[in-house]
Length: 273
Ligand code: KIV
Image (cartoon, rainbow, N blue to C red; front, side, top):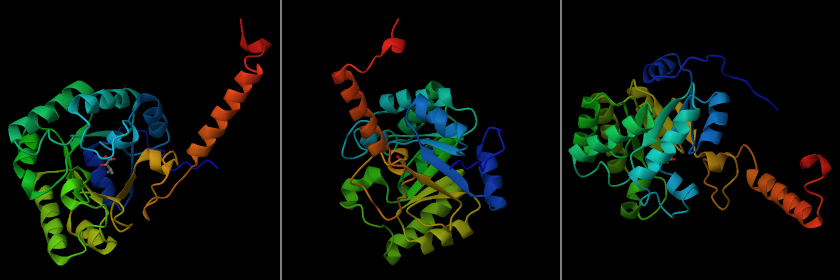
């Protein structure tokens, strides 16, 4: 089945995301980490491509997002940007490159923008990273926020359960979202929080709020590409919808190839010089 929902080929900008929210047009966002898949995702009409630090998990095989480095994120970001014509490309600043010191945060963001040619960066957290966000924005670099379950703080949380169920944490999330908007962030990812809370925040803010596990009452959705294409296994949170079963498709293809090589069926007479 082929579904074609995007006929606007103009480059997506932060301003266009804001306009999409104003006219109630949902924003589609997906992660990508390499040239080939980013090109496919872009041509298929995605609005925003996130070069997520989830690459630490699905590309590098780490248990958390913490080990991935700025150099590694820049390598991935460069590869993605080269393939993308339409989507807005956002690159995650990795753990340890922006939290402690706003000058270091700016230096990290400048490296990403200069070396990858991406359109924006994303950082996790609210009031605790206020100065870093301010300084990055002061250099004219678009910043996307990320609240709720922020994977770079997983060792503090100690669990991947839904965040902000308790009143105090929900209240802080609302305040952080307002703060990020007032500082000038162009959008915020809300991860794994109650849908009612996410909907309330989306109504209060004028910038787009993008959900991963935060329900359908916000302005758009993001998923990790390897999860939605069914390449990863053993990860089935309630919010994840799988649109393909590439794990089985790839396994079958590789098994077929192995059998053909072993039997001498590949290459045949037409497949050689
Ligand atoms: O790194 C990532 O893939 C993300 C998404 C979960 C939003 O931050």
